Image (cartoon, rainbow, N blue to C red; front, top):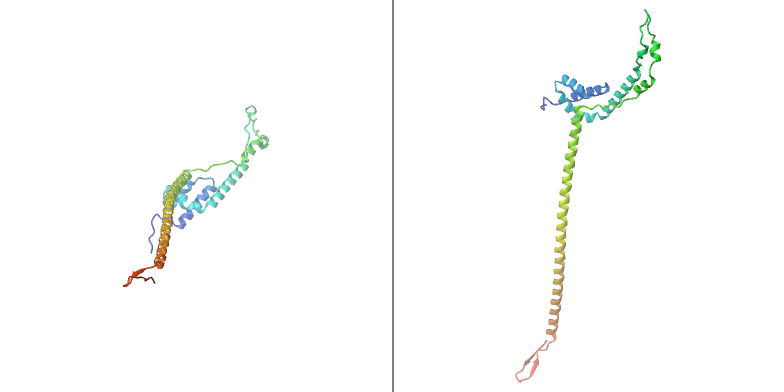
Length: 223
């Protein structure tokens, strides 16, 4: 049976973490509160839950996170529409009602501010930035910087190797040119030697040879 680390995250733990974070986002809460809630359930620290979310789980629920943010904005927009905005009563209109005299509800309806209501209906742009997101952003920035530095070093190494290969190629071309000149000179020497041998053979073949006979006459002995 394989051993499992005590601090290892199971699929159920990741699922609980994802559902809790998404619920807090939809409800307009923060991810830190979600990490605290999951930490209480799983007996883990909030930092451990935040690290697990940013390092492993979040990338699997990117679309769900975006959908939860849209639902949060829609919820805020609906709440803004439903909340009535009343204009404060001018100080000149402050008076004490006589006996059981009360202000009619229609009075407040007449002094509503439509313009303020319209402003409230306009969805406000909110920024849900917490410490975990800042840490995630800085971590990604550091990874990109490290990756760019490694690529730069690789390019410089390749450029240096390319320069070495060019120098080797130039040296080989010079050696090849020198060998070609030596080869041509050798061919010329061999051609001259061949012609000299052929000339000597022809001279030797046709050169008459004589010897002295006993009677004093010359005899041609060439064959």
